[in-house]
Each structure stands twice: as C-alpha cells, then as structure tokens.
Image (cartoon, protein in one colour):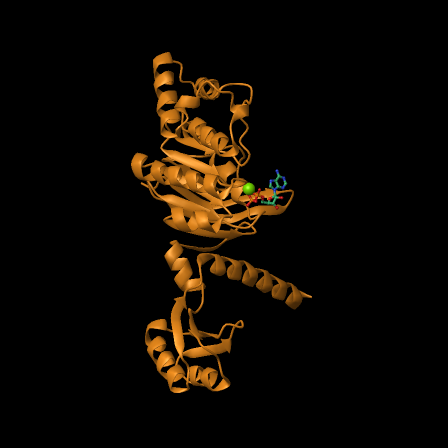
Length: 324
Ligand SMILES: Nc1ncnc2c1ncn2[C@@H]1O[C@H](COP(=O)(O)OP(=O)(O)O)[C@@H](O)[C@H]1O
Ligand SMILES: [Mg+2]
C-alpha cells in the first residue's frame, strides 16, 4: 500500500486553478519532494491532503484513508508542519507540546508525558523544556514545531518549506533531523520546498510543479540526467591561444569551446565527458597548450530546475503568442 496516493487533485479559487490535476504516489518510508517556485501550488496541495480545504475535484488517500470520506482518520495519520507554524511564545516548550497533545486527544497523562519526552529528546530540546518558546532561536522554534507535529505519533508527516527562513547551519540541522525521522523512524514524509538543496539531499523522488501542474517526476539523479543538459570540461593552462581553442573544438562530440576569464581557461561542452576528455587533452597539447588541470562539471539539479522553470515560461509565452 502506498502511504499517499493523489489522483487528479484540483483546487480552483474563483475559477483560478491553484492546483490543476496532480497525481502522484508516495511509498511508505519515502521522502517525497514537492518542488516548485512561489505560487506553484505546494501549500494548497498540502492543505487538501491534510483535509484543511476540500479539493474542487480529484481525491487522495493518506495511510489508506480517503480525504473526503474519512477526514478524521486522515488527521490522525498525519503530522503537519505548516508554512508559518505559530507556537505559543509565552508557554514553555513542554507546555506547547502538552497543549497540542491534548488537542490531539491524548488524554492519558502517562502517555502524554512519554510522547512529549520522546519527541523533545529526539530534537535535542529536553534540556530546554522549561524555557519559553519565545526565547528560542528560529532553528529551535522550527524543531519544536516539528516535534509538536509528531506528538500523536503519526506515520505520515507533511512539511511545508521546513527550512524556509533558516540560516545555513540551522537548515542543515533540520535536514539531518528530517533524514533521521525517515531513516530511523520510517515515517513517510511529504516535503514541500523551493530549496533545491533540500530536494537533492533528502528526497528519494521529487515532483517539480509549476502553476499547479506536474512538470516532471523522478529521483534527483534522474531529473539531473534527463534535464540538465550536457556536461562541460574545464581545462586550465598557462595561456590560451586561438589555435588551442580550435584544436579543442575539432574533437568529436564537443559542442562549444571558448576561453573563460583571464587565467587561461577553456570551457568546452561535450556530449560525453568520458570519451571526449582524452582527445581534448591530446589536441590541446598538440596545439601547444601547457595544461595545469582538467575538470568535468555536471550541471546541478539547480541548473536543471532553473532551466526547466524558464522553458515552461517560454513555452507558455509562445502558446499565448500563437493564440493572439
Ligand atoms: N485561499 C486562496 N484564495 C485565492 N487564491 C489562493 C488561495 N490560496 C492560494 N491561492 C493562490 O493559489 C496559488 C498557489 O498558492 P500556494 O499553494 O500557496 O503556492 P506555493 O505554496 O507553491 O507557494 C497562488 O497563486 C496563490 O495566490
Ligand atoms: Mg507555500
């Protein structure tokens, strides 16, 4: 059974499609990324899946429960980290947890205490349990918000932009905790982000969405291979001459080759780095190059993502022009 299965989810606000037919499935224990620019429909999707708003059409099951017919069972199955989680700043970390635990119907005091201790321990906040949430750093507040989302021990966790607004160190810390939640506790995680680093490091699979539609789904590696375009070879040398550039260009499989910067560097885009590099080096040396280093750069998922979002824009612009 998939932990999460969405089929043709649509959400329209006054005729505007915020989410426009999303279908995907998330396996148990998987971290699945919803990646997309602002306004892509990430938060709206999460709100539908957590039964906070009803879809205009389409449906989904979460942990086997249908979101329209069985919202109570869905809510029991998921923990939700919202986009801007608000804590009770004047209550202590413990009191914040306790408030939530009661709201989730954990009436037994012993169970409540155990759950709270377990979560605060996991997030390294137990020592600070009696401090007011208002005194916490942004990163600690975020940890507390995640701990709170897990107080009823849900198998599925929705996280809406968990690292947004955090400094690099706090982001890294949160990423490590998310990884641990998945690996150690086998929770299924749906994570929305516009941070490519999050997606690349954490997600087994990613769906890039734009204007409410899925653009592409796959593992970060698959997306990179299929979308990122060609690798490039950078050759540093004592000095660059036109003869050397021409010699590099003449290698089979080299697209462009040009001199970059002032420090004697040629950049060449190639079809296949493995087969092209030896020939590039041989030709460059033959043309008089005194080579200092050679490196192959593969475009990152970030390059791919930016390219894709841009292509989408252009395709839509073109379609508009054709209509006119
Ligand atoms: N309650 C709402 N009423 C009208 N429009 C909305 C509402 N919620 C979201 N939208 C619009 O839907 C689109 C998607 O929003 P959202 O899901 O928040 O995107 P994301 O989380 O990817 O940034 C945006 O254009 C947003 O303005
Ligand atoms: Mg959002």
